[in-house]
Length: 390
Image 1 (cartoon, rainbow, N blue to C red):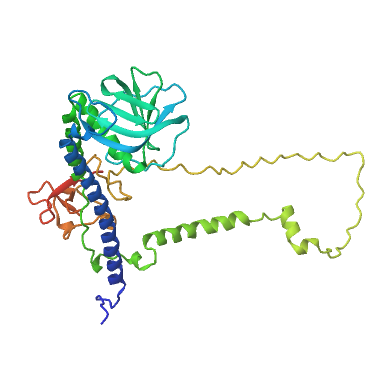
Image 2: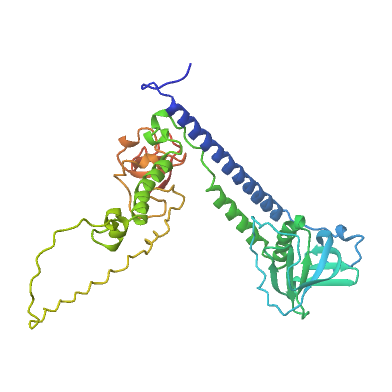
């Protein structure tokens, strides 16, 4: 049997089903993206704490390791690139990028490939064992380091070499290489703890952005405009068209003033032959009296109609709050103790919202409550998350 409300209609149930389905899908997508980034941050944190090399990894390599030197990482498919022009690179930094951009497997303009071979990363230097010889970049002599944001290229400057050079790697290995190069350089200058602390801070910040599961929408929350396909947007568009279309029609066919040339040309009766009128008797005019000159009247020029566009409103700041016409946000300002009557159309109001006796705030389950400043604020909603401001 079809569910109906007190009015016998079913559109409210269909509206609630669509709203709940849309909110659940949006939550699942956001939660999946959040968990992927959380797993990557924790993987990097574990790698930074356990990043160690071994001298046995250098056995069989066509190079001699210095006393105390250990091998961290090797990659056979590396290309040596050199910059054709003079370049000044920024100083090496210990910045961790957990969200590397999508890179294209291409060589940027201004670089030429001069060799290819095996890349070796140790605790003291980066080495390329190519077909034409060996190229070393010692950390103690490194003055510049730059990672190309659009291509899998890393450029390095050292004191004992005039030309800037670097490595071109496969896109699948570039993220791992850049992070391990940062760890190796930090280990060489005894600053690995700074990288670990940075990752710990990134994990803590990311934990604050975990999406909340949305509340369940009930059929009683449906508004009358939800019955129209498209909802509030359709009503707004229809209202705008109702105002714009008459104005366009008025501009395309303006009213004609009576007695004007346009009126005479547009009226068929004006072109018809006039009916004969009775001829008045001739009156003798004295030629000695000159006729009175007519006063010339100059019509005032009609000012051109202004067609300047209305200024655009400045961009709203919301700091994560949903778009609303009241100016409510999560950024800061004044507390709200008497919210607008239509606030539940834009925010998710907690059950019994209007019975609250405090200021407006958001609970940790995503709903808003009017219990700010009360001991039982957001009771039953996982506690208080943040204040809503105006």
